[in-house]
Image 1 (cartoon, rainbow, N blue to C red):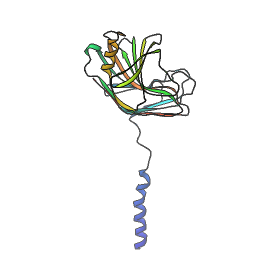
Image 2 (cartoon, rainbow, N blue to C red):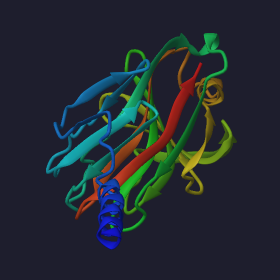
Image 3 (tube, one colour):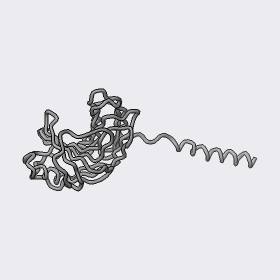
Image 4 (tube, rainbow, N blue to C red):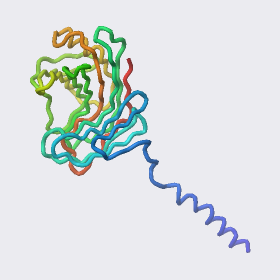
Length: 229
């Protein structure tokens, strides 16, 4: 009877090991609704699928700082979506204290057209400031290049233009980066010093992925993100 008992014990010990390797734990929140939103920690996450001819896109989040999307948008030109995390500031440029943002992302680098970008708005939406931290595929900013400068902790090619409803200032980083810290106050103060706008009130600071194409399905992951100030 000793050998069968040992066999039974061995089988019982082996059973838990079979079930340990299950599916990964589900995210805290997720949705495939094009207009899905979720609020957490003073931020709001948006799936924000809005462009013509967009394909399916689902968003998930564990927190405002850790979230991502899986997107399958056809290669037909035109921005399809801007999934993002948003925080409202509500202070004039002259009243801003230290206002910085840090990010860390994991993004696809082939078979796609998109940029990882901040979208910073004046409270009346008359001015839009885009900070392109990386870009892949055939995408380009609105308007024409005005100058090059290092400001807010990064080197940029700086563009100015209009989309028909608001002025757009695009800071396109001269080299791609998947992580870093941006001094937002320094950037808006630089714009004011150029006379490109006055002492405007800074409204929403958004961070996410402006996706033109991701055919076949691609994952865009925000490992961490925050705004201080």
